[in-house]
Image (cartoon, rainbow, N blue to C red):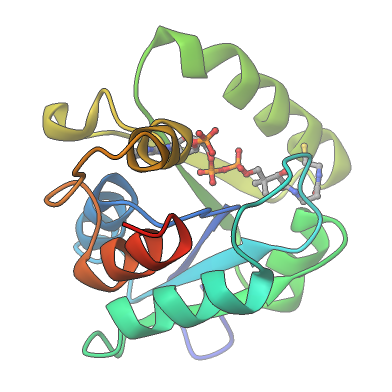
Length: 164
Ligand code: COA
């Protein structure tokens, strides 16, 4: 809860790009939290295809009609950002057992860094079990159609980037 007693969940990620799987997690989280902050990481171990500005712009366009979703970028430690936002919850989506080890590691590291910040996992809807940002990019790069797996503004941007 923040100072105004509003519940906030911070949903961090690279979002390179945002997929319908991510959106499904945000939608469902809005049933539980007053505000969901989609926090796009500047410091990520990945080498993103889209610049930070592009990732933020795409996400802002997608959520422009959802006033309870805030899109921001953050740098440095996630737990410090969570604290700065007056939040206590990090939200992550879990798809399969393969996600578990990495997510468990991150959750434990974040808990070690700040004990009063909690990681909450939501199971991904079965419709998005097989998707990931990487497989989307790989498919489009090879000329495949991923409409229905990503929101329209992301699909347009992917087509532009891969000259489809
Ligand atoms: N539906 C579809 N795909 C999903 C999904 C869902 N519900 N949930 C996750 N994914 C996919 C993503 O598309 C992504 O795929 P990719 O690996 O092919 O890119 C992957 O699962 C997870 O990516 P994402 O959700 O974007 O998170 P991330 O693992 O890239 O984010 C940070 C990692 C940014 C949260 C982490 O590096 C961080 O906190 N950085 C800040 C620095 C810090 O504090 N570090 C210490 C933390 S331990």
